Length: 159
Image (cartoon, rainbow, N blue to C red):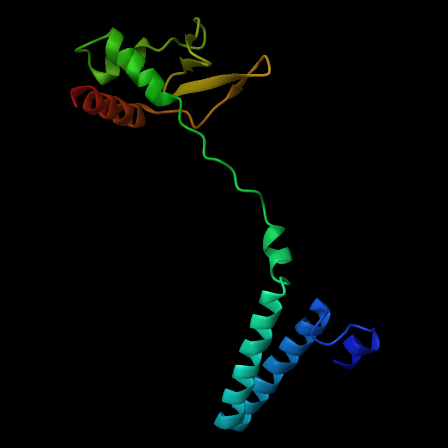
């Protein structure tokens, strides 16, 4: 507290003063617990709560919380679009057949809206056109994950 007051941080006005007072209160509580003084511990805990509430009401805790990473909006997966396209164009076919209907890397890709799809030996990849360039979107799908998208599409169509 001496260091804080020597630097002209005013009592109950500066965040530095509240930080020092809170730390001092925590130290007093720890020492009282070691001594076994329950009455002093309870009184100091109430004082600590009052200090924290005052500091929060003055907005001193908002700065630390606002400095975290920005919230990002979760992107929608492009694979339901692929499942819808394949299901409508190839009715009654198996999931393995539909998986193999996606063009391989050596062939032309399958453009759907702003996405294009292609597959390698075991995965389907999706890319999105951003600023004139194609960029990968989402995780590549194996056959097992592709089956889940196809099942969801069949359920959606049957409703």
